[in-house]
Length: 273
Image (cartoon, rainbow, N blue to C red; front, side, top):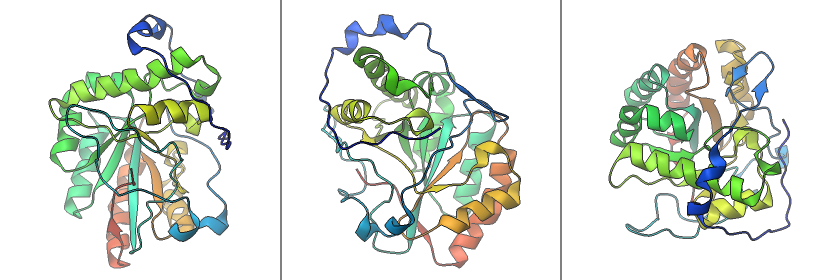
């Protein structure tokens, strides 16, 4: 799956209330050997863009959506956090999972690490306790669409708006009062100027990544660790998974990766808004 990134801006708007009827028939594309809703295969940004200074400008890190309102976010894709210190951002896609999310949260807590969880709307609705556990741990939430269909960018404005706004609403409802969703990650990295603008209009920064662990392939713990270390740099955003199938390799890799990163002097941050 290749990402589609262009510089052309497409402005689109539509009433979410008129879109719910379009939600029926959501389907997800499958990936060979990885199973449904497993991870992504998409090119990272050029190797020359390995430091925040060469990445697009970022705004202040952290939640900045005011209570009772939605602030317009930047539509610019984020590959790096923009951190000037030795820190990275861990992200986990396709959950939450009642099996794997608690195990990942436990490993993160052991090493005082934090992460951003990119959640599929119906998974959040089915596992509200997991969404609440993520919040309680001080971690952050990201919208990963309703149906996790990797052809999302080909759909109508109305359908794409539902995928973004619908998932955001499901995650917020699962998390309870005060829940904030700060980012949107397109399924399979299938971003377009349209869905980036739609996300931004809902206060969600489009979130890419600079390091693909390829844990979605289930290549073995050693390969996951090698993939991360090979691409890791200051301010990197690391793609991993807590949903979409058996994530035992991800958990095992994380148990080795976090102490290694701490020993190397890395800290754990969140993506910028």
